[in-house]
Image 1 (cartoon, rainbow, N blue to C red):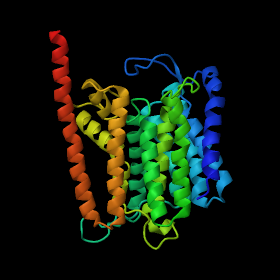
Image 2 (image 1 turned 30 degrees about the vertical axis):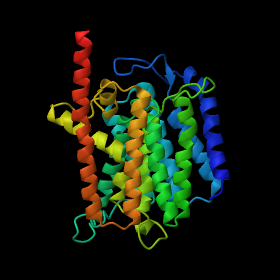
Image 3 (image 1 turned 90 degrees about the vertical axis):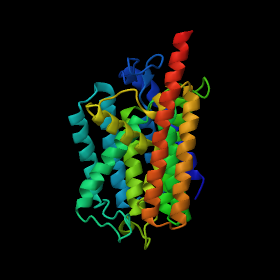
Image 4 (image 1 turned 120 degrees about the vertical axis):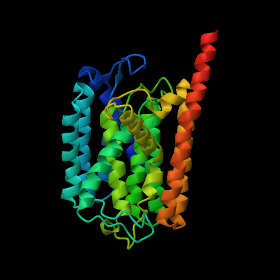
Length: 355
């Protein structure tokens, strides 16, 4: 793979971030502090727009795009626009859902691209869903968007989780000889790097920005699109899937685990699963005394380890049912964190009261 596409995506994204900053202030596309958002000052919500723009430029200049790639750019542009409207006007859940379904339909029906085979999950042969896979794909797109949206709670976390997922997909594409998939996944990962420099305020030269819903929707859509291409062999030139379907879980592990845990907890408490709160895994770490940067490092470390396990299991051609069982075991360990963090947070709170 040439270095030139990487340089293009880095430069294009960085330029978009610089150009969009004054525009965001002009049109009031800003994230302002409130009860749930405890950052300082109003921050431009342009990260998702810049990352999409940088990736689109790099893809258009780097190769002659196949139909499914062109349709992805159209769908992603729609999703970013819907996310931008949501960031500015706080759309209702219903309107946002309709927009997401329309954008996902461009990929699903325009390119006849959907998840039809879940692999040999139960040891009795491949689970083929046929046309029901279309519904499953819609659910996967919506789940991914929500998962990456929910994980966007501290600086650097959404961008880092996106990079880990994209580079995981790119690594498996490289190991299994799929150049187009490797190129796009790698470019998507590098498109997030300039954003991270700004989001984390690496230096005073980088003005702080947030991803916004436009960014989390874009990342979720891109991850599902790439994983669908990689796990469904009929959409690639390979005889077998580039990535085993169950390996997808390992590559998006922390965002998916956090989303499932929080939605189950809300449902048990009789709360609407879509209601925002401050009970995500990163919030629990900070209540337990960890600072945001420590929390970021810990969760990124977990995501890297889980993605690496998925890559190894995929390359060893581990039976898919065994990989699924191992993933469920990893999720059980993940859930144990909450109990430990709750105890630590309670002890910390009691100690502060005694002072």
